[in-house]
Image (cartoon, rainbow, N blue to C red; front, side, top):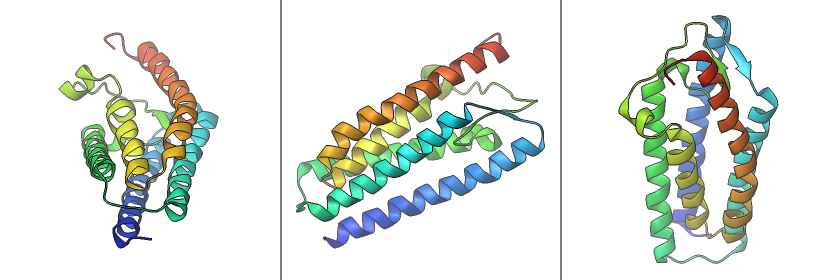
Length: 173
């Protein structure tokens, strides 16, 4: 396997583990302060699907030959954009950001323009570019097409759950 593929995989895993560590720290603090978790089962399915997408992409990378095609560069660009959006969303939401759907007792509605322009920037501007980019870099075409369709199911459920909770919680949502 090409060195750049191995390096990309290591960096991608490290970035996701770091974001998960942030999520766990935030979730623990939110739960201690009385936050309520919504859609626990779907959160588990969503997280499992995300991990399986990464694993499947990496397995395809082992099984397929690689070259530095334009698709690899496009994938790298999309992946970096997705990670920059994720970092921005984590920074903007601060201690409210988790991979779970937690509503704090003192939950405030974030009014940053990014959240006004895109109701769910993490779900639309992070996840699709991240997963598409990952698959393109790793030449994982089966995972790209099949995995994105599968991933869309729990993601759609999550968006609907979050929309319902936010509308019920905030009159100006």
